[in-house]
Amino acid sequence: MKEALGDLRKQVMWTRLISIVEEQAQTLMRTAFSTTVRDAGDLSAALFDTRGRLIAEAVTGTPGHVNSMAAGVCHFLEKFPIETMVDGDHYITNDPWLTAGHLHDVTVVSPAFHGGRVVALLGVCCHQVDIGGLGQGPDGRSVFEEGIQIPLLKLVSAHKLNEDLLAILRQNVRTPLQVEGDVLSYVASNTSAARRLSETLAEFQLDGLDDLADYIVDQSLTATRAAIAALPKGQWRAEMTIDGYDHPITLRGSVTIGEDDVVVDYEGTDAAVPRGINLVLNYCRAYTVFALRCALTPEIPNNHGALAPFIVKAPLGSILNVERPAPVAARHVIGQMLPDVVFGCLAQVIPDRVPAEGSSCLWSVQLRGRVAPTGSNGQGIDFDTVFFNSGGSGGRPGLDGLSGTAFPSGVRAMPVEVTEASAPIVIWKKELRCDSGGVGLHRGGLGQTIEVSARGDAPFEVLAMYERVDRPARGRDGGGDGAAGRVRLKSGTTMRAKGLQAIPRGDRLVLDVPGGAGLGPVGQRPDDRIAADVRDGFVSEDAARRDYGWKG
Image (cartoon, rainbow, N blue to C red):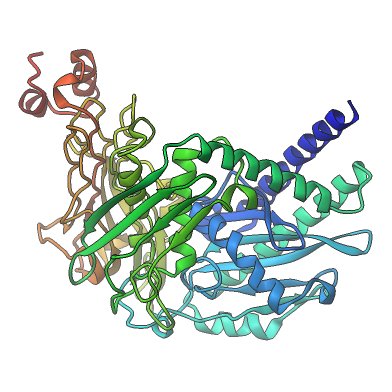
């Protein structure tokens, strides 16, 4: 009975920890300056034990951030051992090879004190719109061109800000107020969570978290291994060719299910390229493990124990495991396609648990330009802004794909009004693309069409980094492919899917975001669902008759 009560108490505390890190994420969103964090939730917030193991993560956030940070906190501990930390310390880096894969993701880790000693670490990792250099695009030839690099440094020492570091940051970015405000919001978020953690430990009359951390890791590890043990054993392979930059890229993977672990090996994947679409292994692991967790252990909370049985390998020098100083700014272009490779393997063994391929890669609209102030002939206003857009996810076993949904990244779309208020741009259109979802028993989700210009019809630039233009999402088990994407001008000119490009004065950028693929035989889709698609504008009457043989 005492043991049962002890476990119940630990479960309650576990839930409390999750609420603390979710409050940490919400504090971050309420204090951040950039819309990517404040409105889109392009972030992670998490708690680690003094050994650097992930113990609890916020629901709000992306797998690319949190799963990368889960493997990155150990680097902070190597540079700043626990015994050297004092209350009010905060540490920072944006080193792609240590944390989240490109310079635009800034990680801040802070010790949490209780009773005069360090009891845990709190970390946040957030997307920074501007980090200097060329900007977030695939044009760079090395990481040195992509922005300012922040090594593992003290951001705050015993409550005293590193003003020299902040001055260097301000000097090297286009939006210094936003960058400094964001960095300070990371400190505020961790400080708030540390205070809440100390209050919780006092409430439960505990001196530290070690016993609870061991319990959480052990419970999650045991549950994960049990789920793996119930799966068929063997190895399955899949490959997928995507657009790439100057030439197509083929991703090859194998999934090997053992007695108590799952190994994903990307042997045979194409080599790194001299453009910023390469991945560091940490980011490759983040989205690979996320795909495995979605399909195999979705109900188990994400922490060190839940992640440990999943092993990811990629050849050094491949596009999924690059060495310094390879360019990596647009690494999501490749990284967010990896779940489709994993699902391609798993579809051969557990087809009832994985979707068809989706749009997958975010279509971020990263814009840069200068507009004249209203009613003035002055120098003008420079802007550098981004807003997120998503295509359709693939058809799912028993369900259609989701339309305009960010899978696997999980970020939110910023409201049009917020985006227009934060930068001198006008979003003229943002609507679902009829007929863009792949046909099938379970239809693919729809993509979107977005039309945007600078205010006053001024010229501007787009840092294009888009996928699924030449090679759309592939249908599965009789389902059809999703619609391909397209990048164009309102005047009719087709643009490249990747690279910095200019939109002339008076013209508009138009993005046709790709749709998800269909799952299952087309002929098995019920007539009432086809009729509903036509009624809702998801499928045109002509397409319904042509593709489904609909006679309505």
